[in-house]
Image 1 (cartoon, rainbow, N blue to C red):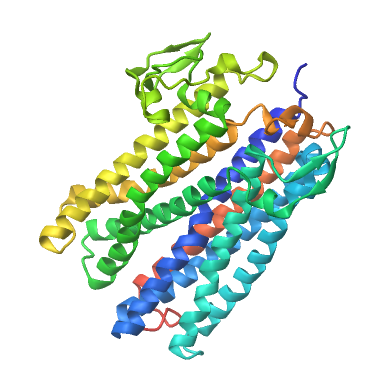
Image 2 (cartoon, rainbow, N blue to C red):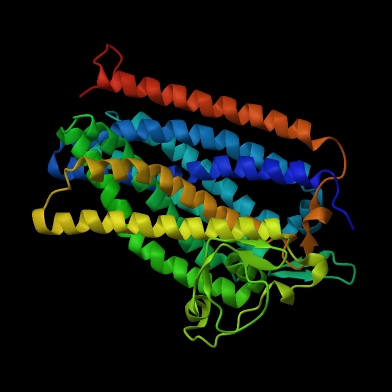
Length: 444
């Protein structure tokens, strides 16, 4: 049965809008935490530089929160307009995490406003504590969305009648489904890795240009230390998550490994592409995949041939998942190496490396961490195809079958590009004001 014509533009639009929105998530979860670290240090030590960082970071967080509100609202409309089969059939379950996310969103908006307005209006510690709910609400909202995504990978908590309609919902099991914990913890740590490396990259770029003052040094250290601490934990959690996918989502794991046939002693294939049932041009590590999956060369891994032909992913989808996973892991270990470089230098000299190569690497690390985040979501989303709700609802049955979705995609593209350009314009204007004393610039 051929896919409806709307499947391709609907999937492309979801890929673009989700890929845009996911970049903003770390700044709602982790960047506000960096802001609180600077605020706490400023109050605890009487550090005016730390307080200035916190104040400026809070204004950046407010801008990014506004952009996230717009992009997230468009995404919520897309779910109903592009995927009526999903919302109409499973909205009673799938909509629950989004209802919880809405509560966290409003809490975050309220406390962002209080925290921004509270500078020099609230007592210092009351102002600091007003910022804590911002981070907590950002985390809660993110975990709610992850719960919805995890439910699509491992649906649970619903009872279906003979016609496949939902007749009963267990909210607890819907939210805390089988994939929730490893996806949630992995995303939580990813937020800290991305926010830490991106912010550190900004200050590393300034330091490369000769701005070695206390302001740039402190901004770099707060952000980089956060990312450096999160990175080894993230590598471990990623390994645990991959093993959980092996146990509970064998089809996705087969795509990750680009494994055409079920077998034991499966090599770990780095790179390469699947063409007509054979992997071409990959570097194979003997027994690697079996060892990583089950700690034994004899571990059996289901291949793509274990998936029924009518729901077996096409080679192009397998290659997308496989190469994205390889890129994610490769970048992750590169970021770990950078964190170790910093940690060892700090251990022996109690200072950050001053070489231009280290600062260049830090500047690049910010962009790479975003690429790593995007690759992780590609693995999660494309790895489930051709299912929207695994085992229950195919993507071709979930998509709308009316209208020209390409026009809708074009409209969304224009909105997102306009919002993104406006955000960049505002942030660059803020940076210029902060670097040049003007009547309406921030107070010292």
